[in-house]
Length: 289
Image (cartoon, rainbow, N blue to C red; front, side, top):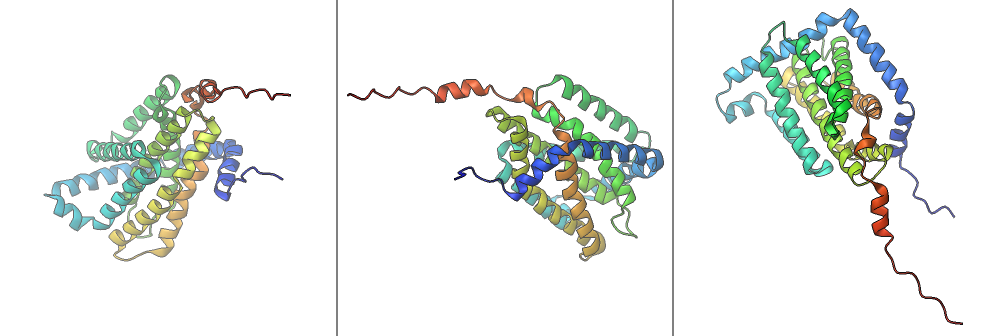
């Protein structure tokens, strides 16, 4: 009888994504290069429009009540996403999501709609993430460069597949980028926790992705619904369903797959030392004849 526990469908899917990770990497690189060559101006306009709109919104807000009245659905959805990361990912994942969200909003504010800023800021981010992944032994450092690459791909997809035929995608880009960054850093913290416990790289990534399943699925659903209501005044089901599928596929098919190329193994604790502690048992007494 086989007493081993059979992996569930989610784990089987994630393990399959790891096997085909090279295909995901090729798709991201080719698509991102194509987007940059053919739609660079449209992609650059996304952070410009988002930062300008964010700056104008900040200028109009006087207190917390103003935030609630102007973006109540997004506020509720955002708070729910953070709470889910605390519940399913742990304290470190929740804190990482809060810090990531604050950094994303700060970057939008600093950008301020300046046309000369997006490309240098993206270049600096890519360079810093590359240096970190090569020389720094942090779980966030392992995740940052794959995120930058996948984020550029997501921005290109958003420039091709609009949120709606009438509304500009600036708000959508800002919300999706913040959500993607927060969940990516939370995923890194969860994976680092499993690696610190001595789990192998593949197992740690799969466990972390399983813990992120509910925050990503429910959070994506809440955000696309909130954006649809805030932008259109009612739920735009076709576009909400489309972008819900795109966000979920982006995280579990592309980001998760290419993140496995990062040097996670150097974060793994020495498993032999842990096993030696568990093996300190008294030898059984010999039976008398």
